Image (cartoon, rainbow, N blue to C red; front, side, top):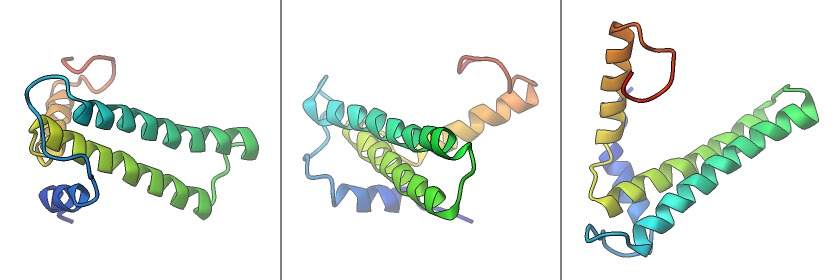
Length: 116
C-alpha cells in the first residue's frame, strides 16, 4: 500500500497554527514541534508501560486503538517539524528504508548507532 506523506504533511499543516517555516536558526516554531514530538513519544510509551503494570502485558483492542491515536500525534509532530525545518516529510521514511536496507545487506541490523 502506498501512503502519500506529502498529502499528510499538507493536511497536518492545516491544523498547525504556528505559521511558516523558519530556517534562520533556533526558532520557537520548530523547537515547539521538537518538544511536542518528544512529549507524544512519551505518551505512547506511557500507555505501553501501563499495559504491563496494570494488565501484565495483556493488550486488548481498546489499548491498541489508544496507542494508534498517540502514534498519530507522533506522526503529526514529525510532519510539522519537518515543515519548520524545511525537510520534505517523504524523505524521512525513504531515507530510513535506505538505512535499514543497507544494514540488512551488511548484516548490521543489531547493535547501536545510526552509522553501523
